[in-house]
Image (cartoon, rainbow, N blue to C red; front, top):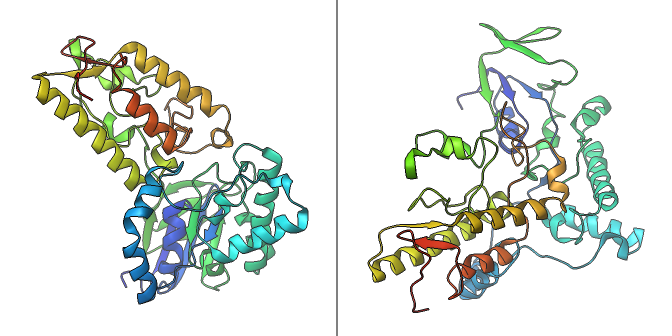
Length: 370
């Protein structure tokens, strides 16, 4: 209730801004949403589970988790091998309508080539733009809310409850910062290029320095005084997103060169922690003090990451995935896009007898008991 009766400004229409807009609008006297880049958002369609279904989930929980660990996304969202143009236009429309009604990220499992076929991607994007136009009553507002200029799902796909419907409320206003940019914050509110919007409260949903920001925010010194800031000055590099050459015993969880935001974070984190624990257990068993990847292994991994990135439309949007939201940050998609299952296989290869990916106490040796 902290916004009750207040004039509120919200800057940012990414995942956070989209989810809090309807909630703030419930009590605010006025809500001004400052939008630079509109996001594609799908209806969340949250529903309460009945007791019978909850019991079914619990009975089958182990099997569901096993499927998630073997999947490309680290979850159990439906997937398909069906390309967009393999079915008729009428069938495509029916599939998209069903995905919209079901809600969530069902669209990602409807067609197999949405992130590799630009024409298919654009047709799905146009379907979603049409839904925005159906929901938002004011044509000008609807048009400004429709994302253009980048592939759908190349930016983080957002989920909402009544986000677009909120713009039909008389006290909610969309301010297009591409047409009328923010110049500064003032004592009274926000000054744009054409006016001053007076506010009582300001919410900044402006994002964060994803993937690398947390590790670059404090000093980490490796061998011979090397610093992560220097190693990553031209972009992040690591082995599996888990370790870095030159920084022994430094383990990362959900690191920048793994599947990261393109996989289920809980499943990914569990896999990462299990991998790290396996390394530490082997070191303890052999009486070893340090471990780090070889320069060759790190270079080979980064070559695969960069090669895979050229085949996905994810690299074609200006997002935090590619570092575009932070001034001066090296640009490029350094997230592993080969899928969670393939990533897990790559991690396991580090423990094979002929692997030379890791060095223990400066030597290319492995525990000899797999």
